Image 1 (tube, rainbow, N blue to C red):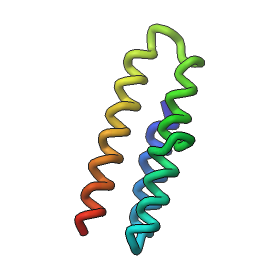
Image 2 (cartoon, helix red, strand yellow):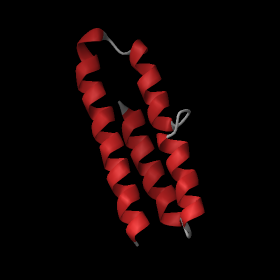
Image 3 (cartoon, helix red, strand yellow):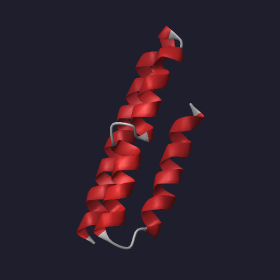
Image 4 (tube, helix red, strand yellow):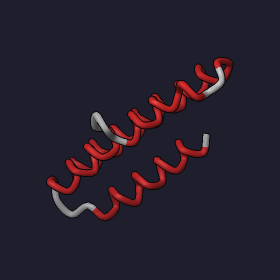
Length: 77
């Protein structure tokens, strides 16, 4: 699913531009929030063939973990 790579690269670009904690929180909400991009990917799961759902779901969860760890690293800077 190309959307996963697109979200990851978009996140990395956005987080690189962040200069303060407020901007970082806005990036966090836009990707991990209720109406964020990760949730959008999860909503698209209904369109994925049944035999691919487990794999795609695992990839989305790994992406979410990756984004969360990148946010934690950025907060510590």
